[in-house]
Image 1 (cartoon, rainbow, N blue to C red):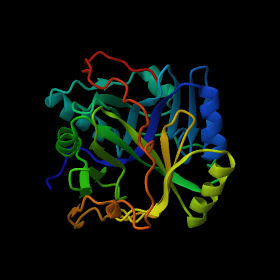
Image 2: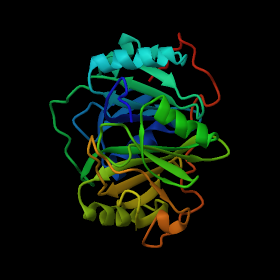
Image 3: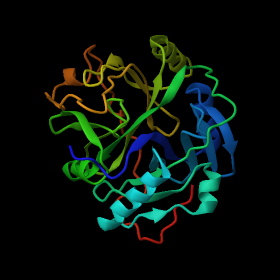
Length: 311
């Protein structure tokens, strides 16, 4: 694959719309194990790393996905990426300095993927927090990935490779494409599948120990939280997983273990059979509520160059 004009460092944060901010803060802090860094009347910032935040919770009438942010390697990558999307006629819009200050990060911009309607933020320079992230109920290593369902699956899949520079690691025929933000090594930092309407599927947190999966199983049962898939093991990434619901019905996942790819000479993507065994080798059956996590904010709308999206 030809060199892309900019390079990713990692998936940085997901901004989620929630209908009861107080309730959601308690869930992501006490059940998921994130650290509440800052709370404002209509927004809360939580982290699972040395970054200021990895999850942003936004009070909203409707739950779902507001945007997904990726950190690029340098400010030069941000400049190159902005020019790239301008040349594609996608109207990227710089994040105002007042907002980047609130987000504790360097310069960046937002651009909407045209087929799913998802708003992406690309920036450089996440603030390294002086105080380390201290795990509580789970040894979370990082925000792992975000998965969406798109009303135009093929168009979204092709655009994420062609326009955003993602690389496909594996795909299950016409059901799901697993992608990594090159040169980040993890099997997938993003994935997309088909649906009748574009929506959030789930948000993943990677943990450092198999025991975190087992402990989570009994912790969520104790709090009467609905488990919607697992525990099991995904053949594409080799990850052990457990999915359950947040208070709004957003699907969240803990996973342990994941294939990593070298920057150069990575294996070619596998075309996997569209059967249940390609999603789980242990035999778990997903609940009908699995992945029905609310709409993508702004899906079906174009983003004018002057638009400024609040946190």
